[in-house]
Image (tube, rainbow, N blue to C red; front, side, top):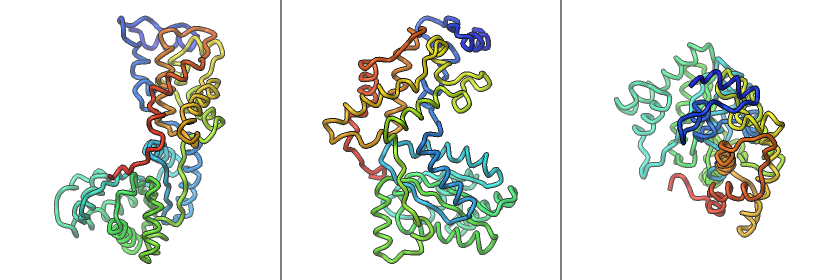
Length: 342
């Protein structure tokens, strides 16, 4: 198959070359929308970036974001790190996935941190060796980048008990006292972080609150149709959603070239999709917000419904969006907010 010829044809509004029966064209089969690998700077992520970039500039010790399950916190961290590496190329950034254990172990804790920063000796040695190995590694990374700061993103932060935060505080102190390197920690987790904040306050651990939770900020999904429209518009914008890379095609244009060529845009469908989310939530207390998992799943379903029948003048209808939302599992998720550490 002439993949590059297909890209040119799609840009010109010509349908792609036929694939094997039952198969998608190559440039569509590997598409991030089809493979559920969407990472776009949504309004919530843009707001979070403003906060994180500011604390990087000020070299503040940290900040804490809390949000409902499946609103897109883990994907947000990946997008934030990507954008921070552009804005602060000298600052090393790392993504740590906090894990819950029945009993806290310093050995396990520092081993998991070493693994998160891709240290080759993450599973060997005793506590003190692991601790110093991690501190020396982070110092070396900062020094080689000519940076006086390092940023750690902690995903599922509600899984860490008080001793883990104390160990992280000690690591931060070692870096600033021994090497002049500031460790900036950004916590992402569920609403349980509010309970942890209260527990630490009750225990008098203002040192940990001041270091890691000076602010508890809400990380939300889509809160209204305007935010949904802005997010869906990213699928139409090749500057932020180009695929294949170098093709000049947006996600929408690649998947529905004929519709796109005739003026259709995914953003035009925002009202129809939001209405179906609203209807689905009607019997569960009303629509408060919609997590990115359900938004992305519904949009993916819509594209899959239409790709085979792409045509000029395409426009989604209420039934199609109703089916897309139903198949996303959104309605079944309403009212569920269990801990990822349970």
